[in-house]
Length: 230
Length: 338
Image (cartoon, rainbow over all chains, first blue to last red):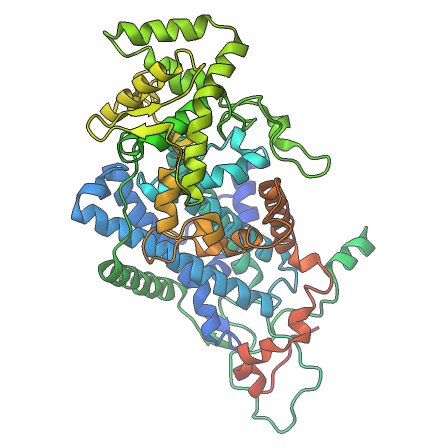
């Protein structure tokens, strides 16, 4: 017969203990990794959120391969060209999925029910993704990079940004592209997803007048199962 | 404070969901999505690849368009090129763009100093060895007062500018500028140009040899990744713009949101690029800062959508949500608890 170990009480004043308690309180495991969703989460529009994250995974994977071999590799090898192409198309899919996701969330008014921060982190992610892509375009070391850099500099210089973000400086742009801005995007996406898990998927608008004679409410577990949003 | 936050939040009767739940596997969904997107990206990569037009070099520019190169170089020398007159962050020869009382370009100052005469012409020429005539011309130019330097530069640049203007307007260009078909050198009939013809001849030779490409990247240290100088010099000439026009990349062709070939490019910049196509931005000398300010305001509004009355209410008024949640509404509810 095995004995269950008695949990050690958190020592008074332990920073680690406080952080753990706060984290578990905000996001208990059943909320963080749910195995149930409200029945209204049944539309193709919900696919685009996870498609954005999946695209980001492919972008980071293909970008990591390109980074491992250095910025010039893709210009003179077929394999390099292939991974650059995967990287490019994953970026296009990322923006496509994200734009559809954002429009979908707008029409759901997904900031309702105390979810303002969910919208804000999503919107900022989109805005940070734009310069992340731009720094990629100006780091390509081809004619596109030359032209885009010489054109983009004027807009950035006009508001003073060019003083510390010089699109004609390949070294600076490459650093931004492979480290600083991806870190920001990943951090924002992580915060966004954690907020979604904390608050749950926004429920539908309540109908002003509920339809009469409709089918009965489909059977579901009541009260909510593991993963329910409180 | 609570009234303010209530006003910012607006009408919100959304409560916690009290209805039914369906089984859901988050990790499985993510794995399937990554697989599908990876397959899609690979398929698109195999079918369409990615664009990779070779970059231009100053050597190419000087060989393909020697008169255009010499015209740009002459303007760099006499301080009338776009880069020479740009202002911050490159020099103090202009205030930069502004909007009303906002002068951020000027306020942030000169962070990447460029003296076009020295950096693009004189300093590279001083690296040319074994050319006493050229070194003598450089010495003569540097010893002259600024006013004289300016007069020499303008005297040399004038026929070149007339030549380029005539070409742009599809008129017969002046005879004062000629290109030797045997040597590829450019001769300019300009009186009172002092040593400038010698300087320009030397710079054209250096550029054709590829030496100017390297010279403009030279810094105090061995490694270098800053292409600001060669890119700005090239953008003052005609080669980049000529290639860009052929690839539908000019500003009036929706500019940099496109990329070479038939690729989607940065389509997410469509709104940013749109402003450049319409008045008053299109013809404004301060178009860049105006567009950036408009986009800054719109970006802020985008972030603050949940707090903006009217914008945040549209989804409730326009019932696209009935389409999104049609299954839910067809089932008759339940509505979220208040």
